[in-house]
Length: 238
Image (cartoon, rainbow, N blue to C red; front, side):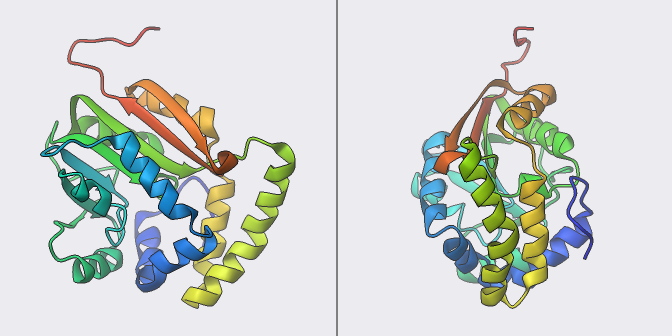
């Protein structure tokens, strides 16, 4: 498998996730020591979906991240590039309308959704900026985006410890559960090479999103970015 960079080939990424689909949710719980559940609650709060609103959940995998929005009464559409992930999700949750899609070329009309969210998937997209522009396109004016992604710990001593865990322990622990250590070598590297909080915020602004803000979770291991699509004709301050 190729080493991780910020340039990914969609077919290779999809194939990698196909191979770990069955145990993906279990591994997330193990390697995050249960923190992934808290992160999902905070994403739900940030999206703040109202009953009847349409929410697009990108990189939804098996649909675990989509379930909270359904509980809020929203019409949630889980989408992922991995057919393996979608197949597992459809088997577990046949009521959810899973859709195969590439985040850089979404199969939805302009302004189709009130909100779009992506958790732990943006760093695996081939072209981050193109994906952020596509999210902007499919959301109505005044709609919002919430991105939950691994980021850079804010306290330097902890950052060093975290990076050691990330590169050494994560692939070993995850590989023991999935029997596929190689995929988690890749994922660990993709986290280490990903943008920090401010850089991702700048990319959101460049893509056309407004009111960009973020908060650090778990000391900056994860960052939650939120932004709003400007109303038609509105311009963000220079």
